[in-house]
Image 1: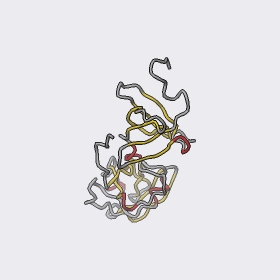
Image 2: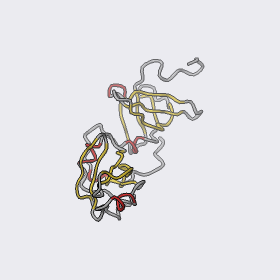
Image 3: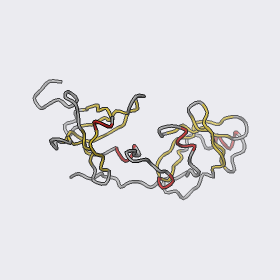
Image 4: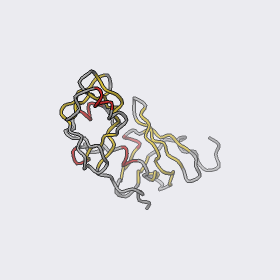
Length: 181
Protein backbone atom coordinates (compact mmCIF):
# COMPACT_ATOMS: atom_id res chain seq x y z
CA UNK A 1 0.00 0.00 0.00
CA UNK A 2 1.43 3.36 -0.99
CA UNK A 3 2.01 5.89 1.75
CA UNK A 4 2.01 9.63 1.33
CA UNK A 5 5.37 11.16 0.54
CA UNK A 6 5.12 14.04 3.03
CA UNK A 7 4.34 13.46 6.69
CA UNK A 8 1.45 15.52 8.02
CA UNK A 9 2.68 19.02 8.65
CA UNK A 10 1.90 20.58 12.02
CA UNK A 11 1.57 24.11 10.61
CA UNK A 12 -0.64 24.61 7.57
CA UNK A 13 -1.04 27.55 5.22
CA UNK A 14 -4.08 29.55 6.30
CA UNK A 15 -3.99 32.34 3.73
CA UNK A 16 -2.10 35.29 2.33
CA UNK A 17 -2.11 38.93 3.35
CA UNK A 18 -3.29 40.70 0.19
CA UNK A 19 -3.75 44.33 1.26
CA UNK A 20 -4.45 46.73 4.07
CA UNK A 21 -7.93 47.87 5.05
CA UNK A 22 -8.45 51.37 6.38
CA UNK A 23 -5.75 53.63 7.79
CA UNK A 24 -4.92 51.92 11.10
CA UNK A 25 -2.99 48.94 9.75
CA UNK A 26 -5.83 46.44 9.59
CA UNK A 27 -4.88 43.62 7.19
CA UNK A 28 -6.93 41.68 4.67
CA UNK A 29 -6.19 37.94 4.58
CA UNK A 30 -7.23 35.90 1.54
CA UNK A 31 -8.38 32.66 3.18
CA UNK A 32 -7.02 29.34 1.97
CA UNK A 33 -9.62 27.44 3.98
CA UNK A 34 -13.25 26.47 3.62
CA UNK A 35 -14.31 29.93 4.73
CA UNK A 36 -13.10 33.09 6.44
CA UNK A 37 -15.44 32.17 9.30
CA UNK A 38 -13.35 29.03 9.87
CA UNK A 39 -10.20 31.17 10.17
CA UNK A 40 -11.93 33.70 12.40
CA UNK A 41 -12.07 31.00 15.10
CA UNK A 42 -8.25 30.88 15.25
CA UNK A 43 -6.56 32.56 18.19
CA UNK A 44 -3.05 32.34 16.71
CA UNK A 45 -1.43 32.66 13.29
CA UNK A 46 2.25 32.29 12.49
CA UNK A 47 4.58 33.84 9.95
CA UNK A 48 6.55 30.62 9.46
CA UNK A 49 5.74 26.98 8.78
CA UNK A 50 7.39 25.86 12.03
CA UNK A 51 5.25 28.01 14.32
CA UNK A 52 8.22 29.88 15.75
CA UNK A 53 7.15 33.40 14.74
CA UNK A 54 3.72 34.25 16.22
CA UNK A 55 1.96 36.88 14.11
CA UNK A 56 0.46 38.48 17.23
CA UNK A 57 -3.22 38.28 16.35
CA UNK A 58 -5.22 40.85 18.31
CA UNK A 59 -8.61 40.64 16.58
CA UNK A 60 -10.27 39.42 13.39
CA UNK A 61 -13.56 39.79 11.58
CA UNK A 62 -15.09 38.58 8.34
CA UNK A 63 -15.66 41.14 5.60
CA UNK A 64 -16.72 40.42 1.99
CA UNK A 65 -15.41 36.85 1.93
CA UNK A 66 -12.07 37.71 3.47
CA UNK A 67 -10.67 37.92 6.97
CA UNK A 68 -9.75 41.36 8.29
CA UNK A 69 -7.25 41.21 11.12
CA UNK A 70 -5.28 43.36 13.51
CA UNK A 71 -1.78 42.24 14.42
CA UNK A 72 0.36 43.43 17.30
CA UNK A 73 2.76 46.19 16.20
CA UNK A 74 0.89 46.94 12.95
CA UNK A 75 -0.79 50.30 13.46
CA UNK A 76 -0.31 52.12 10.15
CA UNK A 77 -0.92 51.50 6.46
CA UNK A 78 2.85 51.51 5.89
CA UNK A 79 3.43 48.80 8.50
CA UNK A 80 0.59 46.79 6.98
CA UNK A 81 1.90 47.22 3.43
CA UNK A 82 5.24 45.77 4.55
CA UNK A 83 3.40 42.49 5.25
CA UNK A 84 1.60 42.31 1.90
CA UNK A 85 2.19 38.93 0.25
CA UNK A 86 3.12 37.14 3.50
CA UNK A 87 1.56 33.75 4.07
CA UNK A 88 0.12 33.04 7.51
CA UNK A 89 0.06 29.57 9.03
CA UNK A 90 -2.18 27.88 11.59
CA UNK A 91 -1.35 25.08 14.00
CA UNK A 92 -3.40 21.97 13.22
CA UNK A 93 -3.56 21.31 16.98
CA UNK A 94 -5.70 24.47 17.31
CA UNK A 95 -8.35 23.04 14.96
CA UNK A 96 -10.97 20.49 15.94
CA UNK A 97 -12.30 18.74 12.84
CA UNK A 98 -15.52 16.76 12.95
CA UNK A 99 -15.42 13.09 11.93
CA UNK A 100 -15.24 12.90 8.14
CA UNK A 101 -13.59 16.32 7.82
CA UNK A 102 -9.98 16.56 6.67
CA UNK A 103 -7.42 19.19 5.86
CA UNK A 104 -7.21 19.42 2.07
CA UNK A 105 -3.43 19.22 2.32
CA UNK A 106 -3.77 15.77 3.91
CA UNK A 107 -5.94 14.50 1.04
CA UNK A 108 -3.51 15.56 -1.68
CA UNK A 109 -1.29 12.60 -2.55
CA UNK A 110 -3.66 9.87 -1.40
CA UNK A 111 -3.88 6.83 -3.67
CA UNK A 112 -7.44 6.56 -5.06
CA UNK A 113 -8.63 2.95 -4.96
CA UNK A 114 -11.93 1.30 -5.90
CA UNK A 115 -13.64 0.28 -2.66
CA UNK A 116 -15.20 -2.79 -4.28
CA UNK A 117 -12.50 -4.16 -6.61
CA UNK A 118 -9.27 -2.69 -5.24
CA UNK A 119 -8.43 -1.20 -8.66
CA UNK A 120 -6.00 1.70 -8.30
CA UNK A 121 -7.26 4.73 -10.21
CA UNK A 122 -4.36 7.06 -9.49
CA UNK A 123 -3.29 9.79 -7.09
CA UNK A 124 -5.51 12.54 -5.72
CA UNK A 125 -3.75 15.67 -7.01
CA UNK A 126 -6.19 18.48 -6.26
CA UNK A 127 -9.48 19.33 -4.57
CA UNK A 128 -11.65 21.70 -6.60
CA UNK A 129 -14.45 23.61 -4.84
CA UNK A 130 -17.59 23.81 -6.99
CA UNK A 131 -20.16 25.18 -4.57
CA UNK A 132 -22.40 22.13 -4.26
CA UNK A 133 -19.57 19.75 -3.35
CA UNK A 134 -15.84 19.47 -3.87
CA UNK A 135 -14.44 17.56 -6.83
CA UNK A 136 -11.28 15.44 -6.57
CA UNK A 137 -8.84 15.61 -9.47
CA UNK A 138 -7.26 12.16 -9.74
CA UNK A 139 -4.36 11.44 -12.08
CA UNK A 140 -3.50 7.89 -13.15
CA UNK A 141 0.09 6.67 -13.45
CA UNK A 142 -0.36 7.05 -17.25
CA UNK A 143 -1.25 10.72 -16.76
CA UNK A 144 -4.98 10.43 -17.47
CA UNK A 145 -7.06 12.85 -15.39
CA UNK A 146 -10.39 12.04 -13.78
CA UNK A 147 -12.81 14.30 -11.92
CA UNK A 148 -14.56 12.59 -9.02
CA UNK A 149 -17.42 14.19 -7.03
CA UNK A 150 -16.51 14.22 -3.33
CA UNK A 151 -19.89 13.21 -1.96
CA UNK A 152 -20.20 11.07 1.15
CA UNK A 153 -22.05 8.12 -0.42
CA UNK A 154 -19.28 7.72 -3.04
CA UNK A 155 -16.40 7.65 -0.54
CA UNK A 156 -16.08 4.40 1.35
CA UNK A 157 -13.08 5.28 3.50
CA UNK A 158 -10.42 7.96 3.84
CA UNK A 159 -7.25 6.55 5.40
CA UNK A 160 -4.80 9.43 5.77
CA UNK A 161 -2.26 7.37 7.71
CA UNK A 162 -2.44 4.51 5.20
CA UNK A 163 -2.24 6.86 2.22
CA UNK A 164 -5.45 5.75 0.50
CA UNK A 165 -8.96 6.90 -0.24
CA UNK A 166 -11.41 4.12 -1.13
CA UNK A 167 -14.03 5.26 -3.64
CA UNK A 168 -17.40 3.88 -4.75
CA UNK A 169 -17.73 5.35 -8.25
CA UNK A 170 -20.81 5.25 -10.43
CA UNK A 171 -20.32 3.85 -13.95
CA UNK A 172 -18.67 6.24 -16.38
CA UNK A 173 -16.45 8.22 -14.00
CA UNK A 174 -13.46 5.94 -14.52
CA UNK A 175 -13.74 4.40 -17.98
CA UNK A 176 -12.73 0.77 -18.24
CA UNK A 177 -9.51 -0.16 -19.98
CA UNK A 178 -9.96 -0.38 -23.72
CA UNK A 179 -13.09 1.77 -23.75
CA UNK A 180 -13.23 5.19 -25.28
CA UNK A 181 -14.22 8.01 -22.96
